Image (cartoon, rainbow, N blue to C red; front, top):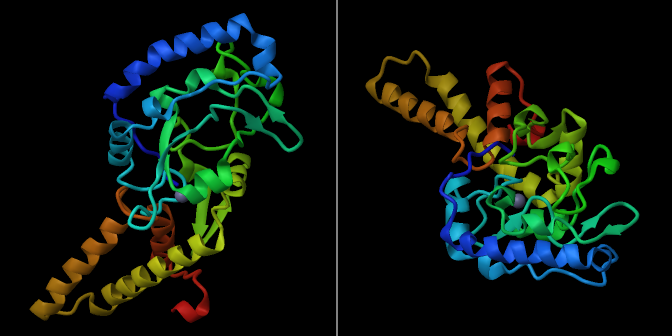
Length: 264
Ligand SMILES: [Zn+2]
């Protein structure tokens, strides 16, 4: 997971969400108890927040990668526009809290693009806080008082300061890092296998650079140039698994290889 910069160009379709959101806030104020006990719920319309224009902008801002796992997955399955703060309800360990962050349902700052595995199967309505007492329960509350445990690819905290990789294995550096790994299952088998395959190839490129370094042959010099460019590209924000690649290549530079022995 890395930090992305969200376009300041708010997608046009979200403009229709301004009035829809005002209507929702008015409806809440008229019947707050019903919304808080789950008898009433808001229809946060995907036709406003999840349009192609919103998805296209988020994909551009995230280089087509999942905001959470850094996979480039849409050759196999379509990703969705997702809410960082859940729009309909919040699930905690022991209860479901209604009505969720309805007032952020059409909020550009609250949206990201994620793979189904991270969002639909893992994150869902999870949004734990360091202190549950600070949770914003309606549009009158101040969300800046919350200290979310889940990291946000577009938030003020750099995920790289909270989550690190040792080979393909992911590890938390802080409580937020650990919670994020846990909620999203960032160590899940299929994902770790994809990272491992990617890091194995980078290891080979890294080894070949060491092997040909100092070789005066023109073809070796040209090869080195290409190989170094590949390694440099692997840690750029548009590269898949760039955080894992950066940590792995730094370890290799330091003479350490944390991949399973068979990988080398
Ligand atoms: Zn993902």
